[in-house]
Length: 510
Image (cartoon, rainbow, N blue to C red; front, side, top):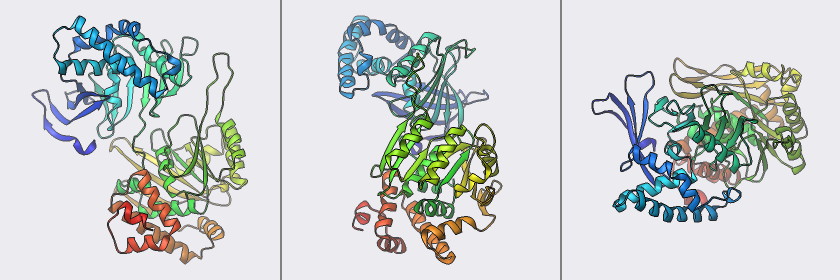
């Protein structure tokens, strides 16, 4: 999608047009323009050819009539066959309604109207268009009295021309989202965390907790998860830094990923997964599903559950971590460490022989140690040396970029030794010190001399650089190359040294 964006065209007398492109929102063709209309934020303008605002209002007003014709069984809404059946039935019902209220409509107009009706009945109506846009990270409904906002990967926060008709529609949408995943939102429980079928995270709040009105905030789930090669390609980190991470994972050295909100912590954790050997059992524990590991890995994802209205049935991150230790994992991935219990279990997992990779909110490598060793997490500082290193992500909002701010190793005393740091002025990574304790750990577990260790990092850098050059950034393709390296290193290095072009068949012969 990003390659299809046309930039710096001129809008027709309404101001500067930054970009324009088309989307397919479940069969509904929409056009998006991002325009500077002289406001402080760009406008994200959505139009649907053949569908005016008055017609939209009419279709929404007929929702109850359509529900009477084709009722929805909430208990079966996750059944794909049932949803497909509903879609066909709504197509037939929509034809009847269109003939009744908009007689003489052309076949092309009918197709547009039917697609819109299905988005309203089985989706989130007008929100389906921004949800279908891979250029967006966030969709925010703050109230029915204001336009919907979106966060564009290139242009930041944009005000849209989409408004929700009234507060009840926002409430109904939140309730529908929650019902699909066993969550409830009501006046007694006005806060809700849930997820969409595609894995996007949803937070909803009700008035008067949110003073302007009912809200829905959706953190979109990337259809193409980040890989380490994609991060090298967009300068999130260098190939040399990624090679050190790879060497740590290969030798089962635990790492902690830190950063601020939306800095890319979970994306980086996901990207690290291509380095995990295919013969290891991986268990991930998260509060909302964000990780997407390569298909061939032996991976078991687990999610927490909120209590029901009676306060029963809650499954916490701590519960999942304790349970996962009984399932013989080789590697544990922890969505986010927030409280002391989480941290204690995480360290218990490391000390009982598991490689653990988790995330925590902190703004630098040193702040990560401070955060972990003070309330509410509050673990003894000396325990921090169970981790081999800390990787801190940084999101530069003004420039619209994410970078690894610091990559450091843990010393025996639980302090941090920063090895690499991002230089914002030059947008480059500087090596501040040589690896010391990490070198000791990798030598201990991998049997390397220091010269062999440095040669191994250099070799891995060559593989990663070759993958970047050949566009191997898809999660399964990248994971396939790395796994092939594990099983037949000499052949992969031969391909890299000869600089042969990538093809699945070429690697498949390894």
